[in-house]
Length: 304
Image (cartoon, rainbow, N blue to C red):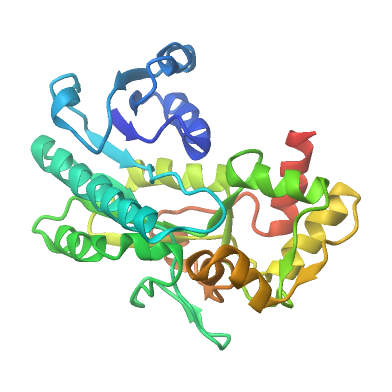
């Protein structure tokens, strides 16, 4: 199967692309960096230089795909987000989704869009795919894409599949930054850290995309998270144990909000539990690392 991957040179892509190739798929990756072409060829994938923000310059270079996967999102660095930066991120996110849909419609093929889990509750409620998205904090950069996605899911016949992964962790990406901060004693738990944040080990998430190619559940949404809900404090404490360092100290919520601003603060203090039951049933997907304990142990082994 010919698979076109948008965002395949990032953290998640570095785990997804080799899995697709191992399954004998012909993979082409869109990259903005021409220097990445040689490294893509070493994995067995092809590469096209271009930016999903403007599809016209590279459209004619694409070998008609059987499936499109978009795992790209605008880069967001930790810290305070200005209003101008937020508006730019919102516009870019909207274009990422709109242009992917346009590509898939031109080639008349199924496609996967990747969004994050964005729910919040002050109770122990468990959210599913049937619950409406609640865009608090940085997920607000996707507030214009919801209508686009609803329209894509309702088309007859549908071609769209939506993945909503929890916070991705593993040996790389933003998790590497958290690791470095903890190692240098700079990481802090916000408040009491008792808020739940869904998490998913990067290799388990990559496997879910492979399952989507096999099952092709068009017109469906899937929450991708591990089996074991955990609080920020539990995750951080266990990570510190794996690193043989003291558990990071906490910082008052009001102080952290003043330092980083409202949007990042709402993101890291979000509280939600989610169910991965639908992904297990429909995709026949099973996380190899069903809890943060297994995932963190594996992560530390690889990082060492």
